[in-house]
Length: 312
Image (cartoon, rainbow, N blue to C red; front, top):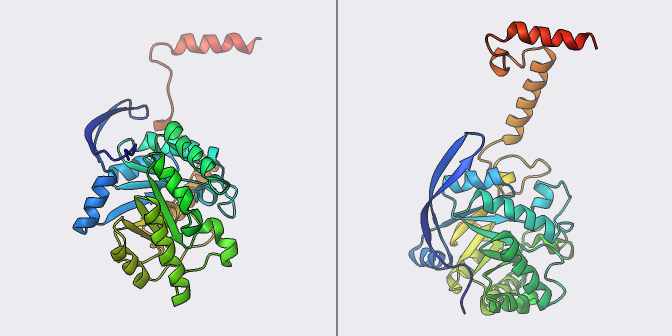
């Protein structure tokens, strides 16, 4: 099977930045499936983050992030929904396109939203291919294990890299009784293990574990030959994912237990807005350094021109 995305690219990309008025060179090495397998073998941890827009993706690539997930969490972080269910394929495609432009040399994963793969294998393949053709992603991700085994196999057989997502799966949080950790009891853990085995058996190149105990994460990581990643599933695995809106302190509705905040962008942004409002109302902005003056030597002519329009 030949996959669309398993290449390692290393080159210098020159991009024109209109804000700076010049071209900017960025050196990046794009990792792929083979590199991630090698990292698992060598015990090197993969770092990945969600991003939904051009600037965040650019910052992530500049920082040296291994992977970027354009998650359906954009529904909550960006679009203001109470959950991920309303997110559409068009939403995901548009945001993937922006992220690809911001991080052209980073492995990007598109998240298949609710309704894009549940109906049939054919629908799953069609929508997975849309991500590749329209947004130039490197892989797709979908939720579920045993119940979507045929979907994963169909997508993989079509030559598309696919990552599984098991444990706490937000799209099916309703039947689970809400956003609750999974695998906390032997009976529950058995279901997670069966899902993990199904994902690997179906041909996925990796699996994401969410909201399960680290003991179970460690067992699955050792049991599977494919990379196993964690979001809220503890340390003993092949890499970590975190939601950018959580770790940057942008999303204020709630903060999951497994999140570490590395910044408080909400506080910084709110203060900046308040300072701007205060400056405008007290006529401190714009200052002299923010305005454009009439060209020297044209003052008299300029004043005469203005007077012409006063008479109209």
